[in-house]
Length: 403
Image 1 (cartoon, rainbow, N blue to C red):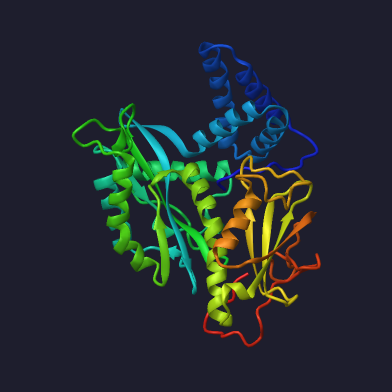
Image 2: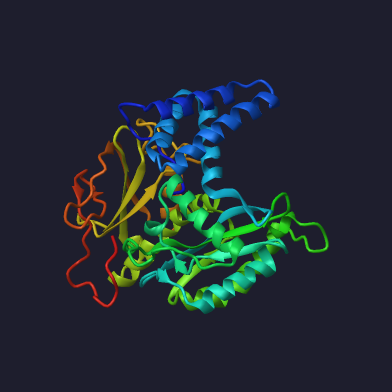
């Protein structure tokens, strides 16, 4: 959805080859004039692929450019996201710039985090506050009446573009949002997870879209907009997410906000897991053990953190810490906490700050195994065996069991 990780592909299509060629040419450009030439070709080709729903060609090109030239990869990835989340719409002789926005709600709970249909009152309150504190004075808004989980968000550039086009039309025409929301995928229950309200903001072309772009006296800095947004949305979000602690981020462009939410939720997932186990098992954090292991096919794509009672080999619970974009870990450094700003160091510090002192870090890379019966991730125990996380049979049943 929001972050790109390379995939192994055996062949590359002609469409993908041409994308790679344009991206490499743009990266090698020596002037702004030449930049514009290659960028125009790249955008035209990307737009044709988006309209054709040819996501495979885009992903293949991203794979190849990441291997060949990181600068070309950055350019291709940025332009693909730009076309997926923004467009210019002509309507009745007037031109509108439209951007898809994500409104993240970073939540954690001991119960369950809601998702699904939003009431008209919640959408109206959200839209009114957006007009008052976030978007430019002449901007128009369309909001999907749905509280999205990660599992329900668009998972490709092509899907994102389709959603943008529908919302852009609804915003500019003040029309009904025509989306099929009844067959949304089920939300996987976890203790800490982002939720999103998704919408489109349309503004007259060339003018400001957000309030921090406007001239005085209406202009407000992002920090002021964020503070006013957090204060104004407190009651609305508390009503739609009972039993949850939450943090609100500034409404922004779709891909940027999804990435930031993905990153913010990772340490909260560990803290929520410790709080859950503390409550369910009546055990202090010091009575827990953590086993950390890297998972992936050829490189580390994610860490999985297993929880057990100290002195026990049984894995009770697990948390996944995915790696995003260029967060790469060398296979011989998977468990090396001496590297500052590395994912494993952040995981180590987060666990330590939660009160869990007993940590074991495996040095080997494990395969990305999932449970064949229920589809949840499998975790590693202290002995290096991949197992299913299982809470004790006598765990109170009034709260849901999370994996």
